[in-house]
Image (cartoon, rainbow, N blue to C red):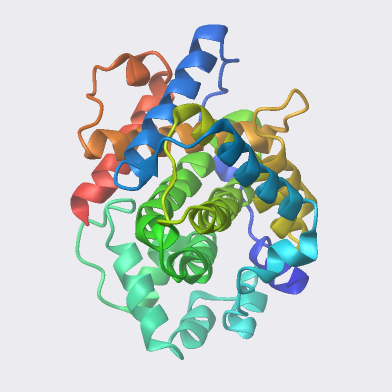
Length: 324
């Protein structure tokens, strides 16, 4: 696992660090609005399966997640490990001397991956002037960093989407959608905060893995498979499940800055990556709430909690969906 992650971290994101302005420190009002975004997102996510649980039932579920977060081996055992994705390709990605032709020959061994790369190159994120039809052209369009991000998405997708029955399975597609958006938003926020672009992207994909496990535990604790629907419980569940994600990331030997970044969200000792992840998470949640018509563009949750750069990022996530 460590070699797999190290290979994916081999790219250079220095050029990206100058693209985004430095983010301002959030004030008390912005922090309160962030809590309200979390509350609105949780209420929307659990609308079909939430119930009014007793405080004792809520605390029992949170204790289960905390206990699991303190046991790395048990926590990691509840989800499959990330598979090795075309090892030779990942080694080549870390080599700046490898040509686009060399990369193409590695990618073309997997027809599914070829289709994913060409689809990525034609996405609204890259906005090609003409449709990209060849693998060589697609790889030149997305570059090595784009290919690393694509491989990370492919690796993480089955971890969140392939779950047992119950609410966790029902919610998995939405949570994966939010994870993808969070990863992209966090990577866009990273340069202005001095965080690594790909590391922030990786943390965005990883942070919801603990939430899926926590939702499975919550569903098992209810006779009908439902989960507590209160906003306060949702906020606390997000916090403890993020610690669970950090525990699993550490057990899988993710880079320490990624582990610390996930664990540090909302803490006084938060790292730059924590800041990028926190802002990316909020932007992604707002994107889903806007698309579901839970909030409007002029809602204070949008206008009051995001600065101009973050609102442009929010719009970019919407443009990507619109082109899908």
